[in-house]
Amino acid sequence: MSEQKDEIMEFTLDQIPEEQDIHDIVFNLMADPNLAAINYFNDFSEGSVDLSAISNDENDETGMFCSENGQFMAISTHALHHHLETDPQKATEILISRAVRKMICFGAVPEAISSFLYHINIADPNGQFIAAGAKQGLENACRKFNIKLTDRKIRFDFFSAHGPVYPTIIISIMASVPDRDKLVTHSFKKKGQNIFMIGKSFDDINSSEYLEFYHEISDSALPEFDIDLEVKLDSAMVQLVHSGLLSSASPVSKGGLFFSLLRAGMPSGLGFDITSDAEIRKDSFLFGEAMGRIVVGVDPKNVDEFVDLMSSLKVPFFALGHVTKGQIRIDDESFGFVDKMTSGT
Image (tube, rainbow, N blue to C red; front, side, top):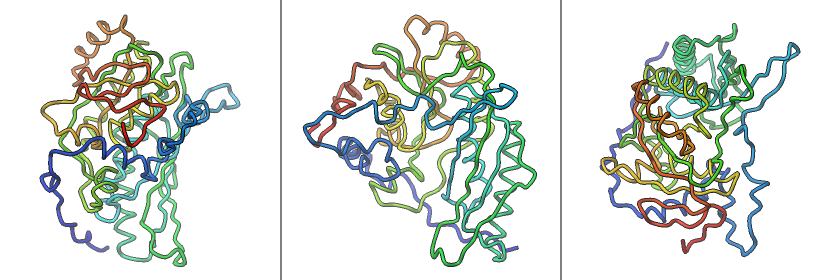
């Protein structure tokens, strides 16, 4: 079996100036095809946006169905190509952690995973290296999260006619839904609700849409990640969902915190007013894609109980701000309204 490929030239955060024009970053990231779910902001016409037709899926792209025995199930599919050729085990563990966290935020219990390696030539030594690392990552993550892995652990697909295509791992995760009445969706519910971040923020923009699309730097390490902390975070979220104290919950994912908040606000046309962490660079805080973070909405009447429960769980958390009627504000600076942003906002 071949050795791992040479490491890419290491990217460091200090290569990017700390003082950035956040308005310009937001404006440009709206055109990022990988953030297409929020690309309706590129419509700067005078006509209003029909929010009912955009990102109004309360299941946040997680499909639900009922089995023959009456058990409700949820399923979603996720893919990743970052560093699959250099660190396939960690890349695979990150992908599974993202999928598990999303299901748990929803209130579902992850049960099983199937996987598929796309554009992998298993006859090639490097393909064998990727497959072996991905298999190890699958097994380790499923063991950590106590999830079944299908008997045929990885399926392969390779056609030379495809040309230069990044090797990609695709997984499908299936989860049971124990109580439909306790499902928690990603969208903000009403003005005035408190927004909290569960998990820690890091000075990390590695492999983020912000770094790759805005700064055009494609060679960087995988984002901050600790699978044992992911397990602890997921365990805390299970208790939070069961408590009924959350009005919304969504993982911080593509586009970082800023775009995760946008996705939460779009279905109801609600905005957010948040304060950034003074100890973290603002671009990292808003657009970094470090793992292990969840944004939750909490009704004011439940805040004291929420804080008490979080303190007992010994998981880091902090108050971000609150849900607004539609305006987006960061550190007392306005970024316009969720249903209409223009180059002048």
